[in-house]
Amino acid sequence: MLIDEIKQGNMPEHVAVIMDGNGRWAKQHNKPRLEGHAKGAVAARQIVEAAAEAGVKYLTLYAFSVENWNRPKDEVSGLMSLLLKSLAEQFDDLIKNNVRLLTIGDSSLLPQDVLLQVQHAIARSSSNTGLTVIIALSYGSRQEIVNAVKNILQSYKQNPFDIENFDEEKFSSYLYTKDIPDPELLIRTSGEIRISNFLLWQISYSELYFTDILWPDFTKEDFYKAIANYQHRERRFGKISEQVKS
Ligand code: IPE
Ligand code: IPE
Ligand code: MG
Image 1 (cartoon, protein in one colour):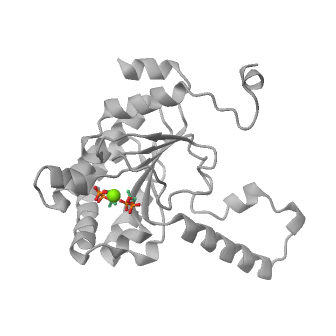
Image 2 (cartoon, protein in one colour):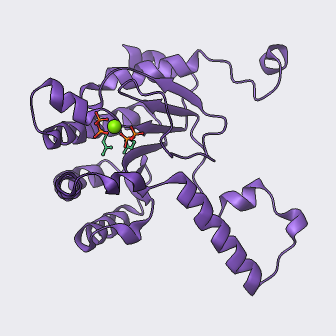
Image 3 (cartoon, helix red, strand yellow):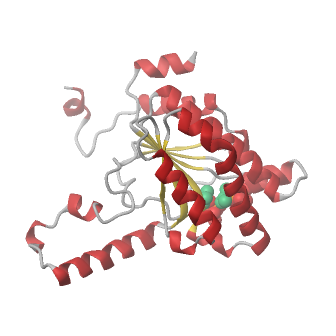
């Protein structure tokens, strides 16, 4: 089985996923878009399991972008209800499986009931030590970076620090993803070859994997295939092959 094979190899510690294609899946099946999203939520649950079984430590799922607030009202409210429903239905199971939940994004834009339930879920899972699932919710990478710069300027005003020693690590500590290692692998489904404002800073050296499969059709096996593909790549980080091999 593919999972046994990839477990022999170099497992990425952090995999990030742009879960795209729910709307096109619905269209293909002559169903309303929200049914595509509901199917997408089931696929997400499967991939959380797959990541835990493979021994991945961090899984970031792009669930809703800041730009997605501009979708038709019905779709936005449908997505928020679906999120509440999925959290309520799946949460006990996730807790039992030692999953820790985090979110990244601008939570101030979330409806109050969603915000409360998300905060509750984060608090309840905070001492879990298994897979960390990070939901990118109301997330935008440029906005994250601007927000970081604002906070850096604020802290400088209060307590001027040595600008000379300000480095990448220090900058990273102002991002939503502080304390989370950068993803080694980024997967995007549905055949779109773009990043859509996702983790711009964090993926600067990630391996990118694109597949035409629509998110609701994406299975555990497809996830393992992406990891197997990653394991066959040579990550050189600017060096030459001979240096990396030795
Ligand atoms: C991804 O699927 C889910 C969200 C962005 C919330 P889409 O809804 O973008 O699906 P397509 O791209 O229209 O097929
Ligand atoms: C990116 O998908 C956001 C999520 C998957 C949540 P979109 O479908 O919103 O991205 P674009 O608009 O095609 O770039
Ligand atoms: Mg899309």
